[in-house]
Amino acid sequence: MPFQAYLPAGFSHDHENLIFDALVRSLQAGCATLSEPHVLIGKISLFGDGLDCIFIKRDAICVIEIKNRWPRISNLRRLLRRTPFSTDAP
Image (cartoon, rainbow, N blue to C red; front, side, top):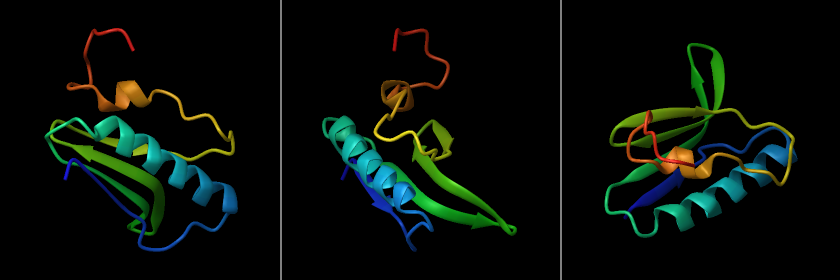
């Protein structure tokens, strides 16, 4: 499967849950034709600090901070690029 998403526990705010769901749908569509696995994990706690999401692919780990700017999800194409420092146009 090219894309999997995990949210072990829901977010505290409704807008965070809505945006996470929209991000999952966008990444499912964006990863549908890709052969390599991509993983999105939401609401992660590390050493007492929280991260909204991390997106993992073969050559990168991206930290995603969810903000209440619904319904805008920006830079999705950049997130899915083959390399994080690609010179391709977004």
